[in-house]
Length: 187
Image (cartoon, rainbow, N blue to C red; front, side, top):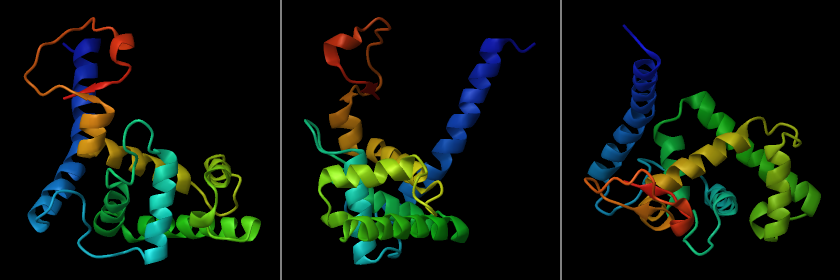
């Protein structure tokens, strides 16, 4: 007999498996191919300008503060790996098209490329993209933001410096006061 707890547990296990398997495959393939730690695509998919644009967007989504930002965590390389090695052709084309629309919007409205804009201007462009107020951008920003977050928290920096790293097995304290650390724990 299924009760609510068993049903939720099974759903969580299924969801975790669906998310973890593609990431595990990507990490395993990357680890076997590259002698140094980090993310690397099997082939380049971005031009130098697109790579700079992805880096600038990533750094605006997770900027450097008291902890390293997206660039230091290798998020642009993670995004290129995912787009090059794991995206279907239509998804890859949509992503590249979204990059082009963001760059084009910056050039038309600010008369320079996105990477040359001041951080406040970059935030304006990304806010408009997030709200769907840039024609042709579609769901690019939401998708890009998800990649940035997943790439950041899949990195050693995101896991060990942004969060408080507690290796497993460890002591479980279900009533640990969040206010004392101000960060989320990861294991």
